[in-house]
Length: 436
Image (cartoon, rainbow, N blue to C red; front, top):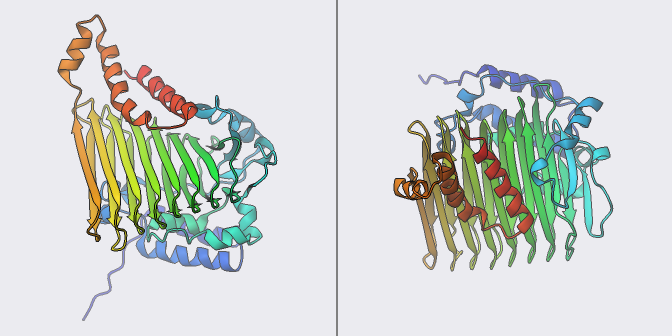
């Protein structure tokens, strides 16, 4: 006799099920979109919130960390929109095209929708409702992950950005997606799609600021043959933030990403990247600045499915107090991806005996003509270097700040765009100035 084993749902999982059942009739999109939602929710319902027995979520037990599920966000009122107009300060000094979202909803009246040849910008909610061809072709199809957080996002996705850069277009200005939240505790499920066609060039920036919200956002990005894309993400949130990047890269394309996490209570940034065409180059980099009991998890799966591609992954983390940093990076080289050149490195700087850094880089190589490597380090500030600075009249706090700045500067300096490089370093210096 075989006993049937059923997982007991937590209160958060029960609330999410109730939220989906109550909202699915009013969520944007019918027909194929509704079927996509239903299938995704079935996958989530079978797995539940990710937990420590799921290897990819071993260090970020979302089932335990997410005790309750907040109610779904409602359209923001005029006061919330007005307050959010100052959001996204980290990149405010740059000449960007600014698109504002409040509680996950697009705010067109506070966004720069000035026409530009070769560029189309829209709302994901509108695109889903109209069964837009671009969305129908890509949403839910860019990278199949099997991840339950992505499945939950698909089932409850409400709004986000839809950006299409036509072939051969070189955007005049970077596009800055600004995500802000109101003071009302709520849960937002944001889905965005960015398609950059053949030989086009674009710079995309994304900033998240929230207080008590629960955010589950997913960005699907398709980079065509010969295209060039830089993508910057800054997360400064006091709530729960789970973000998924699902990216495919065509032949002879180039992309670079950089993520900054500072003053962020609980963040999980997961990236799923596939090199689908030969001769492409990519870089994924980031800096995490943690203190108190903050928790930041950077998890990525890099799949080299075509030959003659190169990728670099480099992440630096500074941990103070009882903070916890997680890095999980897995590079998979498929059998036909010969001449792959990839290197992954993560370094953690521990400023406190109570801080914790978990690093798990991995390689899975199924080709025999490749150059692949990975490494991980964790340690404290060099006391000799600190003593040298203090012997020159620099006080204790300033000496530590200079050493930390030099530590993260190696990664920040890899940013090719001067404006974004300066903006991210300025944010890092502000964090250092407020460090106790």
